[in-house]
Length: 200
Figure 1 (tube, one colour):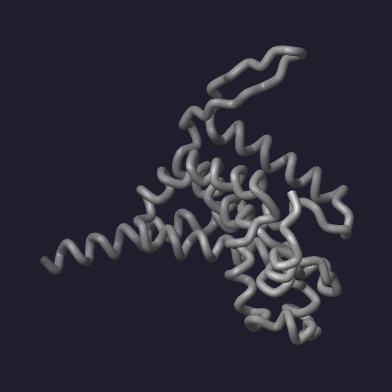
Figure 2 (figure 1 turned 30 degrees about the horizontal axis):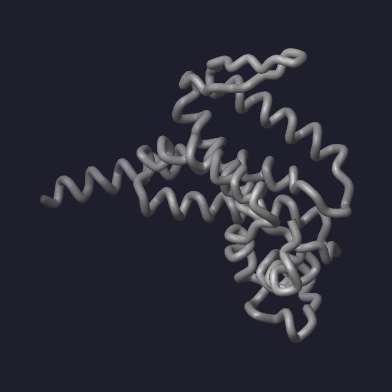
């Protein structure tokens, strides 16, 4: 799906350009809408097309509400952004000279997956698995599904080139951030709730 000239300009202006963010390489004046540091945030809200957006929103719909229930609304948003930031730098640092824009919420969504596997490892997830011409829907534990997902990201990242495409390293960075930050944020949220309750 073509984004048009305006859409392409927005991607370069609001997406993360590693060379600009990490090395201070200036963009053309017409694309200097915001600072390179701010693009770390704005890039999470841009997508390359409907399928890119729909895929991320599907994962958010399946896994996000359960994680939000654990963390709370405000903490969930902060956690989401933090995972996205870690994902951006995980992808950008190995290729600091890259001028290819990085966009999408996949890194932040991967953080939600990481937190989900910590909070709900035995929850069953429906997975469609093709068997020849047929598709079998199975209910598998979340840790099994997400373990295979993570292994796929690792394998794919090792063979990924530098010409753009899927940011597999961002997925890995976001997932690990979710594994680590999810429990920490959950503990802090519980303590804050107890403190607020004791003040009443």
